[in-house]
Length: 303
Ligand code: GRF
Image (cartoon, rainbow, N blue to C red; front, top):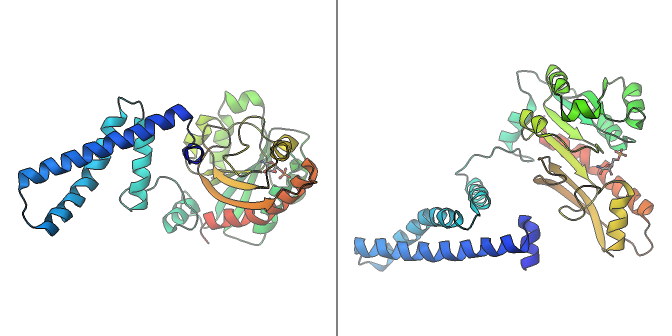
């Protein structure tokens, strides 16, 4: 159970201990404060006492937990946690885009009054996912692939760009990590959504801040397992096979400043067979990616 919580919250063992302590102390404080307040109010009817107690606890609990989380060094975790609950209850507005959410669709559509959503694909390799995305939206006037950004002049995706008549931007390491001229180009293209499809560099903070909630990635495992630096190409499938996993899959997620870390939008699974090699597993994973990535992108975009 603890291991699952660690995975779910993406925290280490020590932090999990602090989080559980915060819950325990915050919960006890809430109960104590709730009863004290009710004593002062001196309510006689049982039903009214219960209703007011529940209401008080609902208000006091987030405050108590946040206060306790400060000395235990867990404030950033709990503020995020409480916001998440607030979003689920519809009290807090989400700053992230969610698949199928009408608000999301409206905001993701375009930055201005255009009818077409402008998508930019970032890719470093063969580009089979890029090709599937291009094919999927070929006859859809609501979506246009306006640019392909690539960091490798030899990449197959550049041939796809040429064949499809989509402008390509080859970007050098220095410009990507230290300059921001390419951001100007993305703005000029009126980019609404950036889709990473096998792009191997970590996305810099400046790009994420310029396009908040508008950059997504696909990863060939069931995150949070087998993500992070170096987890790409055959290495990632070799790791899955070496760990004797019975299943693997794909994850489509928002991009944040850590490798393969942002909020997961969609996952699909496939079996890992006993005699699988990295190559045979990669084929199965690619088929899943090709089937789902274009559809998930479509769901993110208004029709
Ligand atoms: C895919 O497996 C994707 O999950 C990963 O990079 C690979 C890109 O493949 N991020 P392709 O270039 O689209 O064929």
